[in-house]
Length: 292
Image (cartoon, rainbow, N blue to C red; front, side):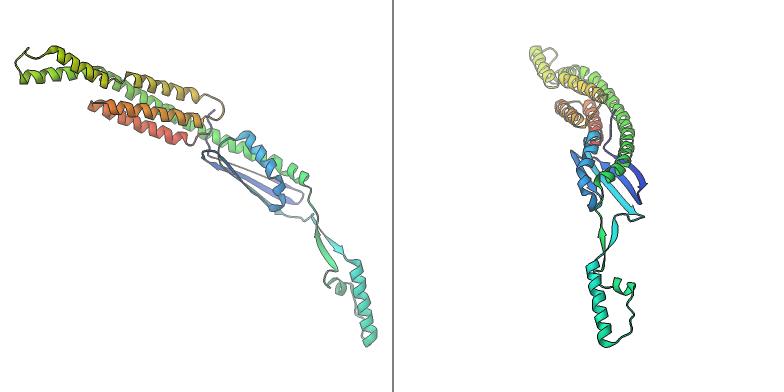
């Protein structure tokens, strides 16, 4: 199926006092440009995330956002510096005895002294985090791909319509091209009759002139190749997997043939139609820029 490079997918999960929201966005790009934005503490998982994405996507500017909110802190704990607390208590008792002060030493007082109670962050289990976010990551990716495929079907329909439009224009060009030489010969003979007496011009020279013009304006090969390229586009649209670069190449060749026909054309109708053909080819080129 044809896949666009434009897509969006989102999923979330709440587990172990944390919520994770994962969003995947992409737009067209010549190659794959993958950017991941997530909490720094989980940067070690970046390569695994990249591998999951690269298994399913091939092109596009892809942005992945992993947002985390903490509802219950399980990665921190209070740690008592017992030796320091004992030192504080000893000092306070000496002050009491030396100055005959009232004994108001309490747990709260000791705990408030610097570095008696410290908050320590426990190292999180990266494997556990990976198992937590892996599922919503894949769900978001599947939704993203589903949107790409929907967009791709619309692009395919539009490309096939434009190919049909070009074929209709080519048919008109072929019909007109078959009469161009005869019309030129008739105009040339009529012009000669106006200038010289009837039958007093060299018919062999006229035939030679007509043959030269026929050779110069012959577009049979270009029409055949252009029709072949249209068939290649149809066949390519049925291929599974990335086809964007191949379509780009075919469109370049179509432009080449259309330009050649335009340069050979010496008929107003053919010129008008080939300009419409080139317009359709340009529209195809713009659409193929969005195909993976």
